[in-house]
Length: 356
Image (cartoon, rainbow, N blue to C red; front, side, top):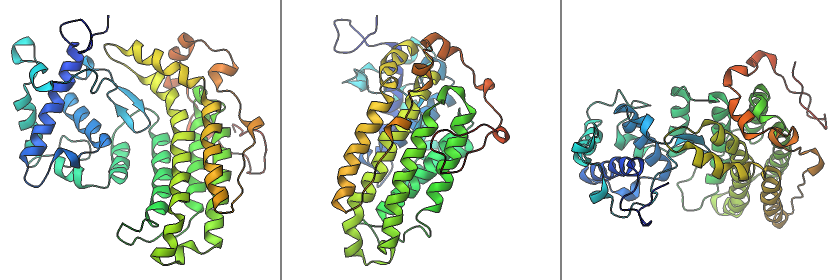
């Protein structure tokens, strides 16, 4: 039976308390550093710093880890702990560090950060621009689907930077030199990566539909000279470009990573997370169309017409081929195609990408 703090059982699981120990240690370390507070730590940074310490203490086999939208993460983080300081695991209960020891571990990174994923201390990580640092993290960590995650973060960063350049409250930033080419190149790379792995079959068509929408919007922004506008004029386009990034992240990327999450989850209670994510995987097309429709309304406010061809959005492989959960989980990364065996067809091909 799964244990939660609010249940009738007297104690949360060891896994939940172990994670709480590391979180309390991280919070204490941050608060002990002059000029920093827990409010400075966003959720992505928190996840990565916790995973770093848990792995460094050789305790990763005792927690559930899965790869999802922002890479590897702890799905059991913050599950049921209200009084983490009291419920954290004590030394005498096993080979676990106490909260104070965890805090000292993080503080020590200010002097020696060689063991950290990007060799940056916790303050350097907190100070870094999150998505730029995340790209370094993907590049240096040998995780599953590494090139797919790199293509994603480059696409996300490009759209984020376009929107940030329109933010009236941010320091004035320049638009990327080319609005369309970086996005087109990285989404093409994303399609090639998806085609290498059978588990993603069908999702490359979703990338094609998103790319056509994004190129239409960015091309219209270029034609209107948004990049050359002053800050006040540019700010009118912030909503459009932020929503385009949202369409990418929630409409496309999260649908891809739902499959990754189910396939990569491992740990003491991994089967719970697989069961929880499976239903979302089956709603891939429904969610993509829903998020697109919301974006299309925003685009229409700017007199930009965008559309997608729903008939070219197939069911994902596991649905189309009636693949069972067991068959899906038995698939291995070693069964993928080599990079040089995959190519994309011309943009005017309405149906499929081809494997060359």
